[in-house]
Length: 480
Image 1 (cartoon, rainbow, N blue to C red):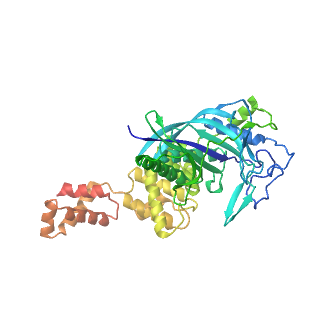
Image 2: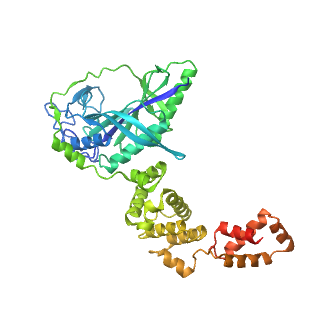
Image 3: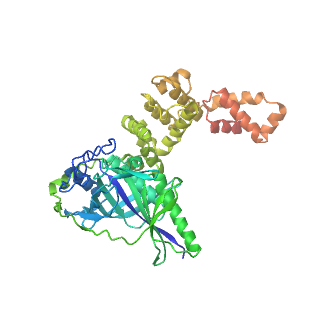
């Protein structure tokens, strides 16, 4: 029986509240230490006041994760001593969180297939963030602007099996939370940070786990977990023991030891300054009503037959997601995204990307009306009204041209509609055969590949790309 990886995640998500969890200090980006109240700096005698907005957003996140909401939850103190935690403890919800027992369905983001995965969510808990330590040379600087910002921590069951699965889960969770305004989700700004517990198992035996802290990019989530799985496998093959430790991620996406970890006693205790958080029916209903339509990537998958890989890729990029949204909103019935479908749309979007890259243009083009011409062009290709070569030439005109181009009018003026008349194709093909030498004609009759390709390309050029390559080849096969 082979070793298998066991991965559980703790995802810390900064909520999109204007103020912090227990103080009225702004949670927006400001110069260092300019968003710090006496509570955030742990001045004696200052009491916390829970943000209703943070509770509403936490409730919404729990509902999106199909959790059971705890109608009476409480807060705890988690004691540990870091310079960026001036109180010496964090206010969290370890014992009695706001929600438990959820599940989240997601796609494994693999270009080759759309496999569905499910992971159990053990709990969703409200907590305050710590400050930020900035290490410079031999000293460290402390910025308390982030201290006290509202977080939800999402704890999954150890059911993930790889770095790819973990990254797929986090990507789709992030898109869901951004769409529903749970968080801005800017990982490079620390608004979403991921910890992973990684171990190996075999049968009923479970190995020692290591904890990877503060992964703040999708690339690191995948690479660091994969590296750690491989590192532990190699250690076990050498007969070495995996040590219970905290690890971080270096610039190359590999895990490195931060410190060996002991079974820490955080001395959890009930937070005496915050009463029991009781969720009313009205607050539950307000949170439920604030859940809108599904996020863009889910709609692309379910309504437009996009692959999960493509849908998530488009949704993650702000420019592409805006372009897709405009295409969706303004496409008419025959040029709507559901009508065109994901495969054909992605095929032609790739052509747009390649043309823009060669010309050093912005991608996707933001010029007014481009999306309309683009959708019209794809529809004409789908319906067989124009050939692929004509479509590529027209697409270049759409990208290069100034102002809006009416695609159908342009094709009418240039007389570029596809030719289907076999009589016309045969006449032009016979003229080309007549121009061949005796030796070339003999080779064509014998099915010589290069000669047939030469004839095919000649016919396409003679008919100004208005004949499809397959039609051209079939024409010569019919005549010869």
